[in-house]
Image (cartoon, rainbow, N blue to C red; front, top):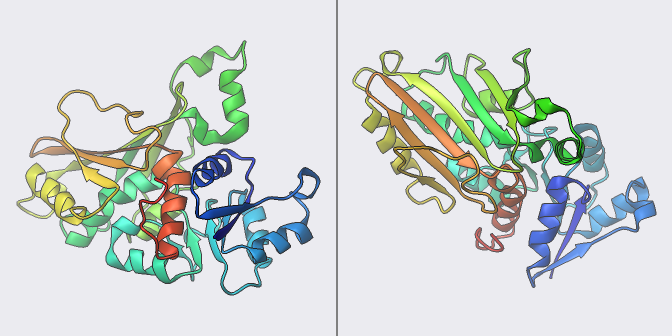
Length: 306
């Protein structure tokens, strides 16, 4: 029986992990009494008694939790931003490359990717690695997410009536062009220029679309829409959860809700290409990816429970 502790189980991601793992017969979830769930000694005991600990915490609390680990066999999967660019931590997106998958399989410290970043790196990483897109390309990334990505407080803002009328419309944020997902987008894709990233939060619960436009005259000479599509198809040809799909009409941000899948689309023409990734921000963008990483780290079928 796999012993799992979810530090921060009361949050949106923690609750989703808890629900998914309770459906499995091979997992025992270690829990703390309500009065002890923030107690460092009790958390330390649970963390070190576990085979896998998920950190679903603010960054500072996640760093504190890691400092409590003494059991060399405990696998830590951090869903916060705290360790996504940290040395010694595997970046938990197995489909990106053989090296990423091996780092997860052999590591004890795994950083779960950010939801927006997952869509961006899935689209951009293969193109950078193939050499058709230069590392200094002036990327622009437009993204739309359901309001659950903001956690319990934001969910309450949207679901408590009466509410601010501005919540009825899409709302752009991160107006200073700084966002907590940008560092991992830059590092994982080895970019030399930080993208312009404009995310929107919208009036639907979960789901996400991440779009990246490209001008072909800024790419390797001779690159066409079909070139880009072929690279993505070859890169993800054996990926269980990342698929290159076809869509000629509308791309819905909530089409993969409740799944751990990510769909990639290549649209446009041979002058201007539009790349789009869709995923569930609570699935492949959070709890689903975390469980997938657990499965890989423990040598299990990565699809187990997903």
